[in-house]
Image 1 (cartoon, helix red, strand yellow):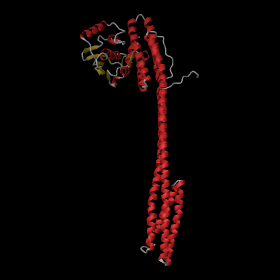
Image 2 (image 1 turned 30 degrees about the vertical axis):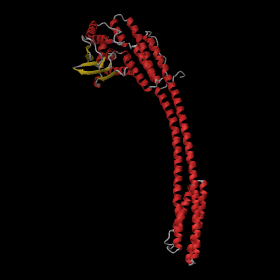
Image 3 (image 1 turned 60 degrees about the horizontal axis):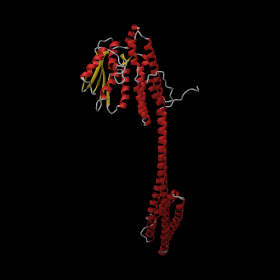
Image 4 (image 1 turned 120 degrees about the horizontal axis):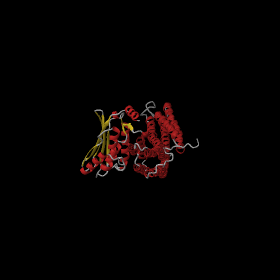
Length: 488
């Protein structure tokens, strides 16, 4: 149990980094917004209180003394006058605002409320005088007191407004200081986040780079022909399967080489099976180099896509030693190959794959289409100015599987096409043709050998591009196993 290795995922590393960055950047924004909303609410409340007091000043300074004058002069009776309602409104408003005011400005309202009680007592005195029919001169004297008290209350309300204005000014200053401090803190946090991101990306790149460099080193050794090189186990989840596939590939290569040396009776077929099983080490080396470059550039999504495509490419190429695979797997194999190559040649290469899904259950000899696609890329698209398109199509016709690989590359001259036809007729296998692939001659020979056909590849080429096609019988899994048991 002590030797169990803990796997680490590239996606997990990226997800963890993104969560930390989001937390570092969002937290100060939330604090800043909360602070501004808090002060905005207090500022709005203060403005509302000042507006209410400003409206109240008119009632105290003008309406109440005016109503008292109308009563004393006989223009209105107490029943007709609204003086008590006005006094009640003022008292209720002052009491309500007192509860919502700060400690500094509350004292002015408390004194104003008590002074309003004095004003109400003077109004009561006028009402008693009128009831007792005292001389008007006495009510006029009381009216003067009402006006003086109302002016005093108005002055107190002015003091309250002044203190609220001062408090609002201090509040605005505090808000400004808070905003400045928050802005400085946010700037520092952004700098810290950028520094943290740089270090984390460097650590993540190193985390991915080390196993990829191991892959590059071993693949380079394999490319030199040393087939006993093996990769150590890796902690990177996305690369673990690829590491195993490379080791399996090396095992298969080593086994096939031994079998090729031991089996003299089937030398020719063993040679073809060896070439079939060989995955081009230079292709692996270049692909791993592209993955490493993407990792160093921080393009982790591309790293994952390329790693998965390369892993599928090896898995299908090996196929546990099987010679025959479903068409669905052959289709997936060329899709993986083209995805990898498009990363390297995205500016010049486009591709289409048109193989219906209902053909997927039939079996064909593996690695028939990939060499044709490779040939189209290296001898057609790559050398043509501006690149071109590779289209792979398949169809069923009268019990036959018909496949076509068409490219819009530079095409072949008549002399090149004639030379290729001669080599295909001779049927001599080649290990160097096709830019490191199996080559058209090898595919043609394998089709004729395994399917027992006189015809293999059909090739047409001109300045507009090249079309390579072939047809083989539809064969199910049961038919494949039956044929192999009979030949065994």
